[in-house]
Every structure is written in C-alpha cells, then in structure tokens.
Image (cartoon, rainbow, N blue to C red; front, top):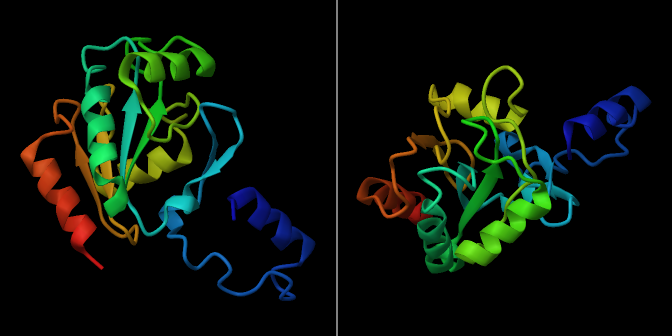
Amino acid sequence: MNAYFKRWLGVAGLLSVGMVPAGANAACPALLDHTFPALLDGKPMPLCQYAGKVILVVNTASYCGFTSQYDGLEKLYARLKDRGLVVLGFPSNDFGEQEPGSNKEIAEFCRLTYGVEFPMVGKTVVKGKNANPFYLKLAEITGSKPRWNFHKYLISRDGTQVAAYSSFTKPEDKDLLKKIDEFLNAK
C-alpha cells in the first residue's frame, strides 16, 4: 500500500474503523513500501512485489564508463533469479547527464544493447534533496549516497539489512557475490 493511499485511508477514517485489515501490508518491509512507474509501460510498479527476495538496486545510465556493467547485471540476474535475486534498475540523469533519453529510448537501449530483462523503473532522481524517497532511505540506512552511476544497494530478503557498493564494484565482484549468497541463503 503506497503512502498516498495510506494517507487517504487515514483521512477518510477507514484505517481506524477497520475497513483495511490489520497487517494487510505486513509482508512488505517498510523499506519497500514505494511504487514507481515501470520503465517499459509506465504502469505502477510496487516494490512490495519483491518482498521476500534479495534485491540488488542499481542507478543506471546509458552513456557512462560503467554502462558495460549492464551485461554483468543481466548475467547475474539470469543466473540467480530462480534462487530469489532481483536486480532492479533505476535509470537516472543525475551524474554527468549520462541518461538524457526518454524512458522508451532507455528501454530500447537496454534491451537491444545488453539484452536487459531485469525490472527497471522509469527515469528518476537518486541524489540530493530531490532524490526519490526510496533512495533517500537507502542512503540514510547505509550512510552511502550514490556518487556516480551504477552505485549499488543490496537488500536482504526481509528488508532489514542493506549493504552499499560503489560504482567500481562490478556485478562479478567476489565480495558482492559473497554477500548476495549470504542473503539468498538466509531464511
């Protein structure tokens, strides 16, 4: 349930009179209680759908020295998605204006150039005071803000642990893979 809907229900008095069952959103960690437009079609993409999975969040850009990491991210996703890993892309034009295209252009570039099939949200802001609330929370929890494109956050299955990795950390980095494996094996 997104924050707007919760506020509306609260204003309408529906939360307090029990019209929304207690714990209706209990399976979704608070960290994931955000919805973004999907890159491909702009339809709402609630992050709660990934509750119970290990999530690798990456702010991406099409014209960056790190753009080739798309290849490794897609391979990682393809290899581990059946074990519960989701790679989640957040295209952003925040660093060096290296993601100037529209959502459609970004989606075409990712699909045609790197065969990207992992989920991606529409272009968003990931740095500064105008960063989307999800990224603000990730930065607050880890003490690590994205300094460039392809900064990574790894979220545990229950959403209680978050690790941050710099843009220089490649998807095949042994420390990143070790932490992914640790999170995937945790029940």
